[in-house]
Length: 166
Image 1 (cartoon, rainbow, N blue to C red):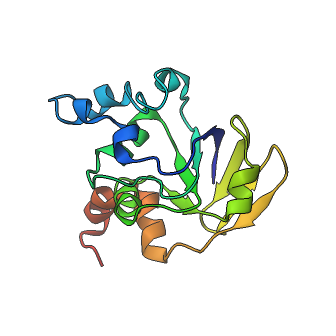
Image 2: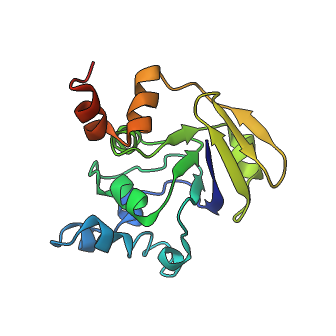
């Protein structure tokens, strides 16, 4: 079960808005990059993120470049999940690979969520609840292997644990 405070963002949040290229191309650690997360969207947002926070966004979250730094920086910043109307395919896969749940839900639910609300995500039951406004929605269940990858903290820990991808 994942529970966290909502940080609400809009549509088409691309990977360069998650972490600007000027930081991706320097020789800095992911933890250093996390200090600059969403800087070009809101220069103060990084300082407001608390461990466990959940990003809620509109359509096409994670569009843009395919670099995996974007979801890695989100994990390093303490973000526990992303809930959105839709995801860029490569971002979705990169998020799963680094252990960041990326949950697609219906528009009505996303539109009802406000910045600061508290969400609860049950990956096993495929339900997201807004504990603030009492709304809930189901989402398409993750295949068992993706649940295991997320439960392991990402693809590399999963392979280390299992000894194989299958």
